[in-house]
Each structure stands twice: as C-alpha cells, then as structure tokens.
Length: 399
Image 1 (cartoon, one colour):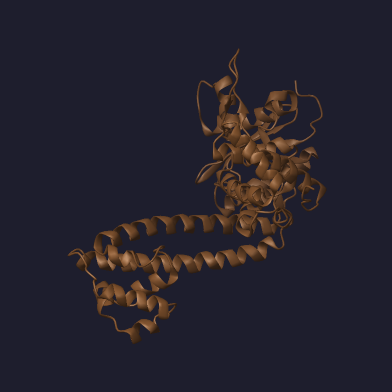
Image 2 (tube, helix red, strand yellow):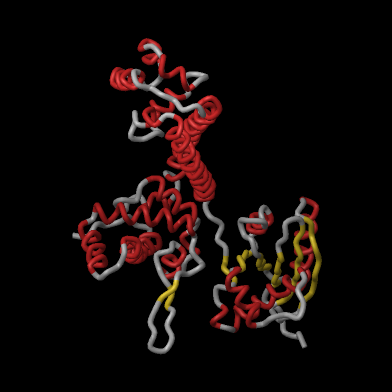
C-alpha cells in the first residue's frame, strides 16, 4: 500500500507538562514509530537518537510539528531548530476546528499525536487546511530578548497599576489631605516622603531641615508639606494601615527602578533589531512600542501576506456574513500584547501625521468609535509596515 518513495519524515508531538507523546510517519501516510519521552535531558536524547536513526535509514529530511511552541515545548522546540530540522507550530484554534469536523471515538495522547500526522497530509492536499501547520522561523537573538524583556516589563507595569490603586485608596481613607498634596500619588518625591520615616504620623511633625534632606524634595515641595502639617489629621486606622501604605510606596519605587532598568536593556536590544529599528522610523512609534512589536513579531519571514500581519496585530476583523446580513467578528488569532502596543503607537502616529489624522477624523465622522477608527488606520499602517519589512526600508512620510 505504501510503496511510494517517501519525501520526508514527519514527526508529530503531543506536548505535555511532564512528558510528550511522539508519532513518526512518512509522507506516504505510513506510521513508522510511536513512543513517549519525558521532559528531561534523557528524554530529549532518546527523541533525537531515534529520529537520527530513522533519518539515516530513510535518507529523508525531518519535519517536526508540535503544539505549545515557545511554551510547554521549551526547550525541545529550540533544540529541534538547532538541528536544522523544519519546525511547525500547530495552530490550536484550527486544530480544534479539525477535531470538530473529524471527531474521534476516543481521546488519548497517542491519538492526538497521530492527529498531527493527519494534519501534515491535509496540509498537502486540502487548501482550507493551509496554515494549520505554521512553519516556525527562529527569531533573531535580539528579538527573542525583546520578547522576554517587554513581557517582563508589561507584567511589572500591570503590577504597579494594581499596587498604586490600592495605595491611593488606603491613603484616601487614612489622610485625604496628604494625598491632595500631589496630583499624582506615584510622583517620586511623594513616594520618597512617605517612605522617609517608620511611622506615617511622624510626617506631620517633621522639621524643615529634615524634609530638605529627603531625596527629590526641594523648597517648593517642602513648603507644600509644611502648609499641610498645620492641619494634618489621620484617621484611627493609621495605626495598622499606615505601615501598609508605606510598604506599597516602597514597592512602587522598587517597580519604577526595575521598569527603568528593563527599558534600558530593551533600548540596547532594539538598536540591534532590524524590525525594531525599521518600526522606529514610523512617527509615533516610540521605543517601548517598537520593542514590544519586534519581540512579538519575532521574524518578518513568518508572514507571507500583509493580511496575516494585520490579523496577528489585531488591526483586522473577519467577515461574518450570511444571506443579506453583512457583518464582521473579532478574530481569535490575535496577539494581545502586540495589539495593545499597536493601538498606542497608531494613536500617537495619527497625531503627528496630518494625512493619518484626516483619515482618523473621516472614520469618526462615519460613526465609528475611537478604537474602531484607530484600528482602521492601523489596518492601513500594516500594509506599510509589511512593505517596509519585506523591502527592508525605512518609512517615507507622505507629501
């Protein structure tokens, strides 16, 4: 039945937390091996030893498909790429759709691994199955760094927002007049003031000389504090909540330092990144947004069409029409981090480029909301970005 000469060896990996199920087949459709490996160095050695033996036996190139690329599959995915084998990421959304169309009577890890081999076959012969297996191009080292650094920065920024909200709510309950000293409770001088003593109540008795010794507090802020001291009043909860406020203030200062250090590292990596350097030529695309976009895009060759890039960046919608109804729906294949960075960058861009601002205002006049108008402009910019990356050129402003 399988008498044709195979063109390649196909490997499907059902990725698990502690172990992975592997199915190996040929392009003819024949399954030639099935085994399980642990997510440990000895398991990886077993995996590569068996595949290298099959590679020598059949004299065919190896292609590997797996779920969880850059997730649970690490570091196996990077080890596959290091071998020079083609690596494919299984699109989980399209895999789920495939299982709905072709449901199985049972479900095991071995069955799921064989499903990956079936996807190889479908990818060859069924047009609608294209991109179920997405070829992975290993990103340049600097973009891998940017991905890690920008995601870490985003987590710290989100933490700072949560801590700041709790911090201001507690301070409002304990001493609203103290909070009223500043328009922004996360100002460096204000945080330094709150952490300058072991008891929040001592701030109302602090002498001018002591105030001036606190970092970032000069004559202006010292005068504000002294005026507040004359009518300072704390609620009874300050005895046990005051310490919490000071801990939150100290944590915000710590987060500010960590975020600043990450941004310095991101700037250094972005300077070496082709994608980040190219995007930085777009007006409004600042250092943080370009670093985040470069990290999430990874490699420009992964997108063969500008529509795919727009979909990934969250700047495009999918048609959702039936009969006389015409509508759209939000795609699920969006990188939410890249979309957030893109929304910020596009909104800043339109304020600097008159033609972009006019387009934004046109969409607003049509009845679209702010975010919809920004995404519409972002869709146009995705065409420009795609061309910039493919042609390896900087942005040229419109005349």
